[in-house]
Image (spheres, rainbow, N blue to C red):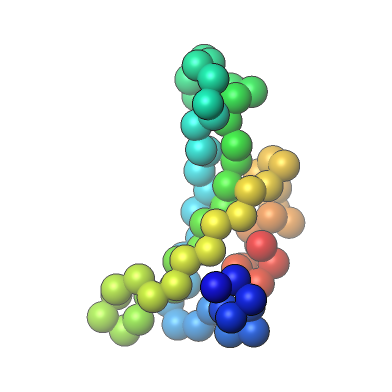
Amino acid sequence: MAEQDAPQPFAGNTQLDDAYLRGERPSVGGRGSTNKVPIVTAVAANEAGKPMRVHLTAVDRFTRKATANGPDAI
């Protein structure tokens, strides 16, 4: 699926957000946890606001470079 979707850029209303995925081992909560994986998510919606495409990318840390250029950068 990734190969099929790769040449199609996101279009329309696209929103980016950052989040953490919880790790497999119990750990302390919050952004300082070493057990969580930071991700950047891009969601493209149609004119009715329904999600049409989603892209999740794990990043080393949240930086301007990881989020500033939209879903094509991630």
